[in-house]
Image (cartoon, rainbow, N blue to C red; front, side, top):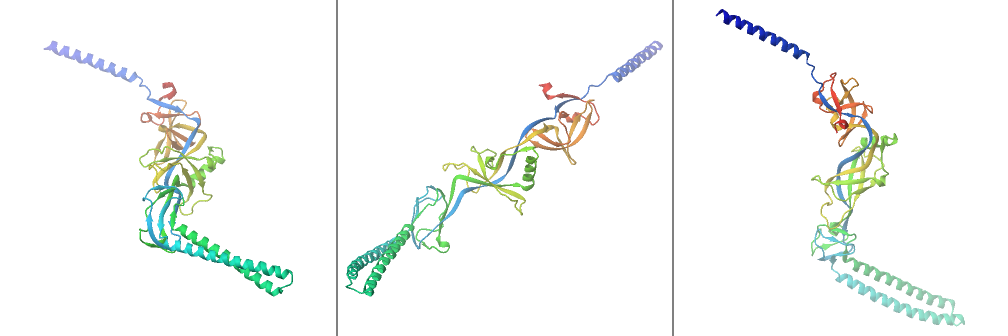
Length: 380
């Protein structure tokens, strides 16, 4: 029994020594620094794309109205059909206008006949007047009759021309090439030049289309300020290129161009109005007037901007910040004024070129703690 107790005491003593030895070794072990990915702030040109809501409209949208009164006899198009300029759309009852032309032709023939008779009378009296066979008054009276007859011819010609114009208006033709919308008057209705009954339909020109959109006045002012200071490059108004982003996120295959930039800011919306022209084909149905899409204005870029990976910027309640790795490898939190564009963050304030920020592994870092920051180019 005594031997067993001595052996137990000996075992516990050895175990305690081993434990103490293990603790000393653990205290002497130096833990490795947290490994993070770093990136150097550097300068580059960064494209700046503006994307805003827009509404598609036709380049022309017009009403087709009756220019003469009458019964609507025929419709020669299908609603929603694309028609060429000059194609017939409607025919208004032509009978009264044909009669008016015939009547005007008869009046003209009568006036011309009277003019010829008056001319013959005038030529005879003129010869007699030259030899003194008739008085000045007789000569003047015949001349006046002849002149009135010639004036009547001109009036009859005008009446015939007006009757022919009105007859032509009975064939309502497309004033532009485009899509004809729903008819406003049914066949058999009495249409008139005045009032709502004169509206027959409307048309929209879809080749090309227009995109109407606006840019915030503050954004537009900031862009122009950056351009004046040399920080931003902006094209001339005629060189702005736009892309149309459809509702499903797809991009319309044909790029457009800005054709109008308002010279003043809208007082109600605090925005600047733009209009872009979008190439279009009459047979495609991807873009339609009235659609709401998004417009990307491209061609603007930051010049020689300080940039870091977008993943480096942390958004908090007090603003944006980055974790900067100082020369002694310790981490410092730095507030910055940043703008994320794609995979990059453009740093407007708070960071200088050449400084190293943590781009990956930020959760491993603590302010004031040393880290092992491996630059991305070193990893690659």
